[in-house]
Length: 210
Image 1 (cartoon, rainbow, N blue to C red):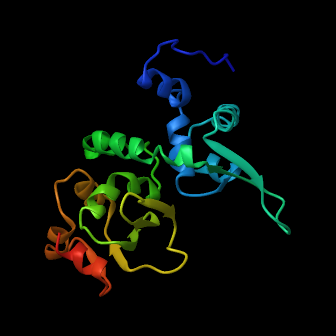
Image 2 (image 1 turned 45 degrees about the vertical axis):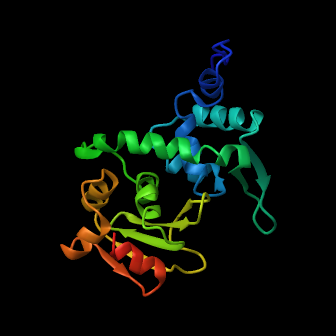
């Protein structure tokens, strides 16, 4: 791998790019925002990345204090990677990038890979706009993910909510993209029969009312 270089500029944006501006780095962060991940899980959910590049990016993140590696307790012998608080602070950065990039989801190429939890980033701000706290489980044909909505503490994870959800949201990928782009609200999707929101919690009612 070529040596890492700095922009050598006394600028906050340049410093940030020194840390996370390499190709694949922010996508590795996207995967680690889900929670602790094994190397094999990361490689599976980053189609196209080589093992050498992934190992290099994980090493860089650890050296920069953005992630850590720890061994799972017995009987497992696996290591997992997870973000530090400094690394998790990149969530708003990824959200902003996802919001900016959402118009690019208008067309899906036949070669495009997709994972359900990739929709979490562009969806978070729309779900948070409902103004209610709680856990929502989002179900798509491609899989499911869950989001935790709390003031200044949004997060997301792959798969069903481990401790149960306050609301369930069922929709297809095209509808999810429409919501992510701001072309459709969840409430409109419910009324048009494109979205199903289940539950009687404050969060579920707020999502249906958006």
